[in-house]
Image 1 (cartoon, rainbow, N blue to C red):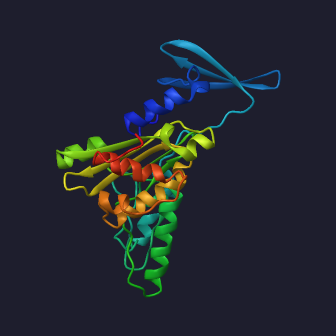
Image 2 (cartoon, helix red, strand yellow):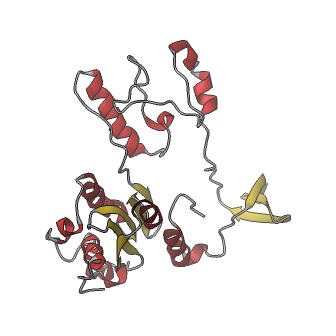
Image 3 (cartoon, one colour):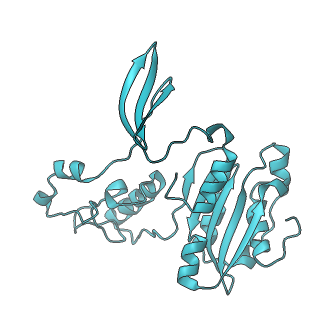
Length: 257
């Protein structure tokens, strides 16, 4: 489940979403759809056994590949090609050639709207003569579950592979005053920093994580250190305090954990 997210986050979501605990089917192949008494029934196969899943509607979100669409564009007529992964390569100014700009899903993963928005702005600025470029290092990923999930930068595993020794701080939303007042205290905020305390990555499973990740993304983009976040006064009680608390925990300074 959710293989694009760190295992710790997946475990938290699976434990939190009690209503789905018995209704998530992995390693299961959808075979066909039937309609019975005004209801849709998905027929699937799991471990050689037939599974029937009933519902009011069926949402197909099986993903997509880029090659068929790009084939239809006849890119070779414009002197363009797509790479072995099925995407068009561009430079930091979103140029695939001197006169052709490419943005969005066609440029590859992550296939996210906010990445495409920024690429579109860069392409527009460059086309109008501005000196602009796209930085793909820190692109937040958000999932609108309940609680929400947001990640940006390196995971702990990737950080350890790259830096060997890292600092890790974690703050439970069950200790957040704002979360408690809204009766939404599930989840956590986790920060990963280098041994010299430079922020490397942030992971959130929390209410309003999709909003909180903006501060974390800015901190990473500005090459912030733990003390930069710790020394910034955060309003109380608010959800973003959890990010500050997690940074404090990485230095064993958190008083609310």
